[in-house]
Length: 515
Image (cartoon, rainbow, N blue to C red; front, side):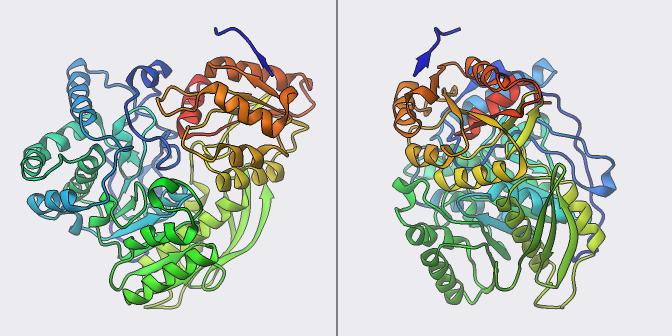
């Protein structure tokens, strides 16, 4: 081990788009403004782009920068400071009492539009993005609420595929602030950071107004703040062990928490699950008189072929087959996310229950071809190839490792790993051991990052001392890994995979100049 010195149906109403372009933020902003947010509640929110075919060409990957107007920037910083003064996402109380009180005084804005509610352990944000892309390509105005954020808190609330502007974010916060304070005064504990943001998202969607909201849970389901919404479609991505201290230590126990998003008469779109998790979900569906669509039964991936820049799929939805679907994302897990998203949108449009027909094939193809999921086997550099993947638990690492082996022909792959301290780090590293020639261990800027020496000790146990290098600074770790990959020579196929945490990936993304 070595260490260097530190240096309405498919034909919905016309959509609207009021988003303006936002430039790339500077890396220093992340380090300087890191708060107590939990970076592992969901996958990377490094940015998004407008996917609606009627709204002009895609805008590209967007990460909001600080507002250029000094007065707006000052106002946003004041809002950020007020939000940061509340309970962070790492401090949770299993209750929806406070968020329900806020919805009451706001006039129940979450009931102003239909919703698709997404829970699960891995793949939530990628699936939510695909659902959003499909709905938007069918000309519905979408609102999407996801977490965490990489740099700007405004990334969490999106309209038409793009983060709300700083001005709109500030306005929304100030509009609901008196009601937030009213609820604060009436409760034993003040509303948390996540609860206030959830209230803001629901209010912003009602104000827009949106035709449909795509809402990702923060954690679990039953007591998650988002669960005051009644999703007519409940999506459950694969359940695995994560946040076991809060959700339970078996897939079945965790499923019991996540099953709370299934509401009376809803349609449940169930990805492939461990047996005990599936049993829990099916029992909940029966109790709520919900209709269930199961991957592998009512829908599924018929075939998939590796293609340049992604994969070519034939998907079987609730209404029939969709051949020739190009998905610009790598890995079998992304193909499964895609078919879950397709079934969710079909269910939203009544396909499979009210009528037996497929959605328009060309529209479905166009939607999936436009999907972008930052930080998911995302190539950000060539010569050598540098890939970012936000896997942060063993099941996510296994999926990423399999996808890398399938989609990339590396002769030597170097890992850059920076994890959080509350994860199954050994299991995570063991998943990558077969494909990493060497691993450079490091840390990101958050207080929850695992101590680099502790991480190194586990890495040595998994990889052996000769395959582990320690670089406490992420920029040094990237440089070291690229140097190791280049030792294979320019044309020998060396590569680098940065992984371990959504924040590690987000910071590496900015350091590498991804725009």
